[in-house]
Image (tube, rainbow, N blue to C red):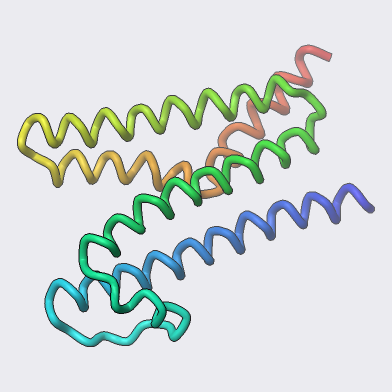
Length: 153
């Protein structure tokens, strides 16, 4: 029973973090749009504190927040993996997955910049980072960890 509660806690934590991330970025994107196009679309009152930031400041904050959410998702997911399987090897798998996808994100962004197609580089970079800012690494790696552990035991 206690194990099921802890698993439920991890799953709910990932879901809440995902919704919170979306809430933050939607509101910052609204502020960016308002700033760039001199509009006044509504945003949540929590974001009034940064509503005076200029376009570049808001845009830069998204990079910082992206890094922050990637790290938060990573730590929750490695703890969840360790709780499920009690094997540090799976923490290493998560680390490899995160490092590889972060590098691919960086490479695609830089490639877009180098080949004068920043938007295309951004789209692919965002795709990789979006994956890392979600529960999807757990969804994909948990079955592999389970079957690996089952076959080793």
